[in-house]
Image (cartoon, one colour):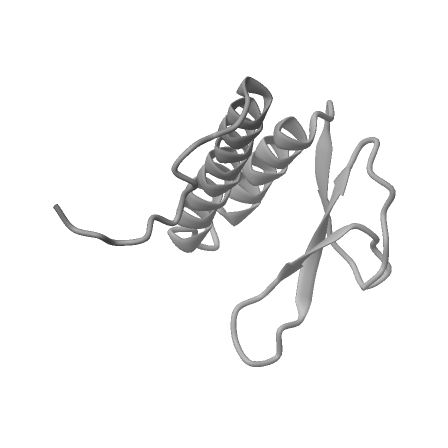
Length: 106
């Protein structure tokens, strides 16, 4: 038997601690799924389907945040979560506006 230190505690003191660990793991998994699914879909986008894919990503984001709706807003004066174009310029090309989430300017 190896005598390695474990990244997790050997004993979990209470059921509450165990529930907290489980909820944290669930939250990480949900965030990872949101990023993975949306990222893959956007990476495979082309000019003919980018609007549709951004709209689906906005819907996923709204659902993840517990909101009813999200929109993709284009334009320089738009407020919300920036959607940044790939490349060295890192210029926002549009923004997600999510109902119930206060928009901000970057």
